[in-house]
Structures are given as C-alpha cells and as structure tokens.
Length: 73
Image (cartoon, rainbow, N blue to C red; front, side, top):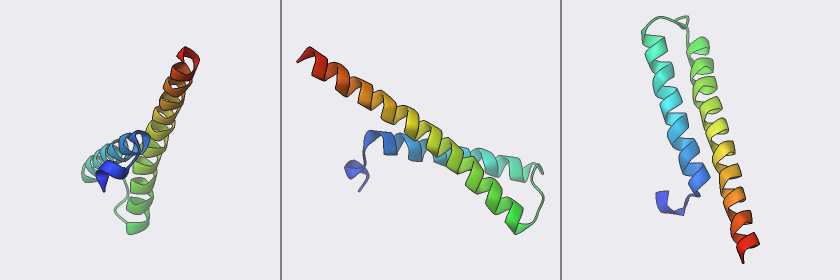
C-alpha cells in the first residue's frame, strides 16, 4: 500500500507522525491539560498541521519539477 501513495503524501504522513510524536512528548511533560478533549485537540493540531504543511510544500516541489521537465522537452 505504501508504494501506491504519492511522494507528497508520504512526506506529509511522515511529518504528521513526527508532529504527533512531539505532541505526545509535550503531553507527557505536562504542557497539555490532562483531559481527553485537550489531548485529542493537541494531537489533531500537532499532527494535522505538520502533515498539511509538509504535504503542501512537497506538492509544490513536485509541480515545479514537472514544469521544469516540460520546459526542457
């Protein structure tokens, strides 16, 4: 299944995973109130933002590379 994913999506998933990992570290250090709603929102924001930004940058880079290849052809 991993091979079928696009490169930007793979990069986004890896970055999102790292964002969730860092959020968990913050939760364990006591930076998030210990209630389920706060923890869920922290994980959603941490992983989601990292995923979205990494995916967007990788998608733009792939689009630019494709445009450069078209111009050279």
